[in-house]
Image 1 (cartoon, rainbow, N blue to C red):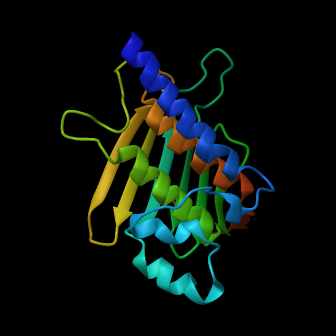
Image 2: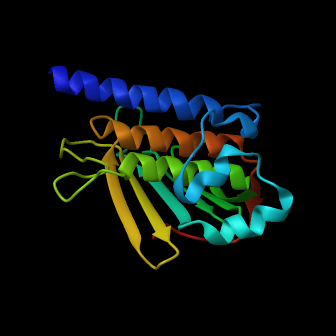
Length: 199
């Protein structure tokens, strides 16, 4: 139990570090207070306009495709939650609302490069030390689960697929999911007339 407590404290600290800086009105340039090494070292300084395309091309992650679905509410005779959020490194954002959400239909928007970069950095930090004996995301198998599914596409052609139970899953996945939700909340969405469906 002591190990679990320590692990939970670490995850809560991570959430406290990243999520407040994704809140409304926060200055993106104040996101990090200490230097970052590796492919995200440019995060230590404000992103310059002339460097935007170079940074986009250098990012190892191409896109995040997040889907959430749950069983219907039989007591209130309401459909289960079912929606999809997609972010691409070119700034494209797509939202598809199917059931049990406020926005039904397909919406498009744009996200800041800084938000995509921070999301990529957060994902790589949370999954850095995961090996074959561990998984990022957990589905225990309990009934009536609300399942989140994340597909991360890389520029080298690789894709990582993760699934998580929103109620009894992985706290690390919860941290990333909240970051995705926060960016989606801040995005200005425009309704699209085209038809689409969940894969």
